Length: 93
Image: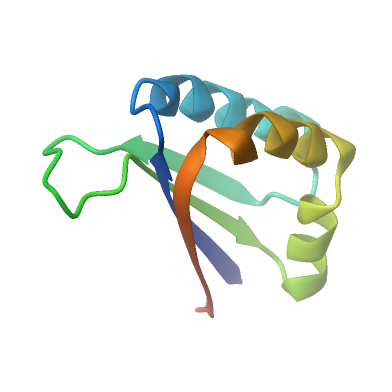
């Protein structure tokens, strides 16, 4: 199983809650997502990201399929202009 972890910091922290809802809605449309969890930061420290998303995929090909899925690409168009920073970690377990 491949885990895909994304930490997002938004230019406007208020966008994180809408992003959470939009990301979670992808699960119904994107078969390449085995599971997804999305969490909003609660402590708001100076080094905190606003949102953490973890998806799992059967393998790297499934992750690539998710990333090029039309629903993901449409969401990315909304998301990218709102991001101040994004960090990704992918690992196999």
